[in-house]
Image 1 (cartoon, rainbow, N blue to C red):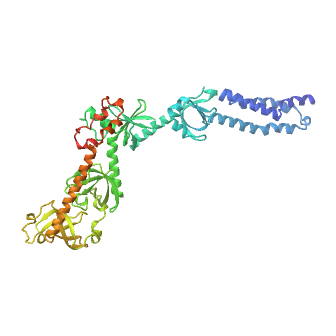
Image 2 (spheres, helix red, strand yellow):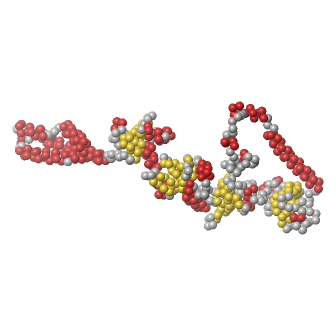
Image 3 (tube, rainbow, N blue to C red):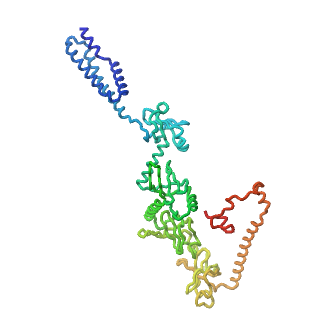
Amino acid sequence: MSNDVTPMGKDLMSPGEEEKQTNSLLSTHARNGPAMEQAPSLAAQQTSSTAEPTETAVPSTQRPANEGAAAAAPASNAPLQSIVMQQALSDEYAYVRPKRGEIRLGRVMDIRQDSILVDLGLKHEGIIPAEDLQRVGQNAIESVSVGDEIPVYILRPEGGPEGSILLSWFRARQEQDWLDAQRLYETGEIWEGKVKGYNRGGLIVPYGKIRGFVPASQITGISRNMNAANLQERLAKMVGQTLHLKVIEVDRQTRRLIFSERIAQREWRIQQREKLLNELQEGTRLRGVVSNVCDFGVFVDLGGMDGLVHISELSWRRTKHPSDLVKVGDEVEVYVLHVDKEKKRIALSLRLTEPDPWQSVLERYQVGQLVTGTITKLVAFGAFAALDDGIEGLIHISELAEIPPKHPSEVVKVGDTLLLRIVKIDNQRRRMGLSLKRVSEEERAAWEEQQATEAETEESAELSGETQLEQQPQAEAAEEIPPSMEAMPPEPSDILLPEGVLPDDEDADNPVE
């Protein structure tokens, strides 16, 4: 009996031996791949074919006492082996080998002086070499720390130091910039870029790590008839400016990224116009830039749309021409009078941003007071005169002289500065009555003498200032010039003047930028 039982005992494996066999199968599968996938089933078939005849040949009375326990061992370990094998196969097939040109997100493990170690969740860590870090720049390196996630470009999947994967942080950022540029091209969004340089054909505007280009034909304010010298001067002045740009061409193969400032500016102004018309409320104040000055008023750019300040709304004082108060390029505060959404017009006011002189007129003036006024307008029934603070009063034709003239022009003319007496103040109706005839000869003589004295004082002050400049000791000027510089010719910057300005011009010391 013992001879018959012995062969059965040799076929049964202990749990330790079964674990060794499972590990052996797993290592074999890892080396040979899916070709060993059917190995467990073949081994099971072979075992079952040899076990059945032996099992029938042994009588039930001759079975050992521990046969049930021994036979139960393979049955209980079979599911465990299957789970382990399935897990190993799942991990093997779930693993995606890295390929050159892929962009993956990795976690910074270590920042060294010559490299950065990155965990990509793969079998080996990735390494960013020193050459790539130099292209990225010190600012970018200092902005990351251990544990941060950064995009990396796979240069070499294998073969780096200690089997590591060679990565490029610079290429990943550059590739991402190309993808973002393509998205801007497809969506038509407007982007703001800063001009870094220029060449013969246009402006250079970086987009991340990509060198973008704006042709001169796509820049507002540059005409085709502009000569080369003026073109280069205009392009040079635009360096450092921030422009609204729109992508009009993206070619990754030829590395072409072309912007248009002209199209972007036009579309941006349309968007801003609609936004202003919808959001702007009457009675609000905002700042703008004077864009045009004409006879009837001033146009102010509110950031995408122009509003009109009529000449009557420029100041509380009467104005001959808008150019007397503002010029193109001035930044001003305006008051919104009216918004016409249908006609897309905005009416503005400059004078309403200043204190209304009529609100305090009773505090500063009283009936019988002598004031100085300048004739601003002549009408059939009298003449209007403006005081220094902008309040305008009427000199009725009956108050011009003891014998009223047929027309005010017989006594005064526009531009005359006269001494007048206040005869009426109507604060509610914003009216003031003035009189010329009620000023006595003594009062007029004293006023004229005072005016002459003030004029002489101003003239003396001006002459004194000019004399002081002319009488500067030449010794002081000589001491400021080193002896080695006395015989040297003047620098070009000392003798070049702006175009159209002569050395004797008054504006030579303050050239227009």
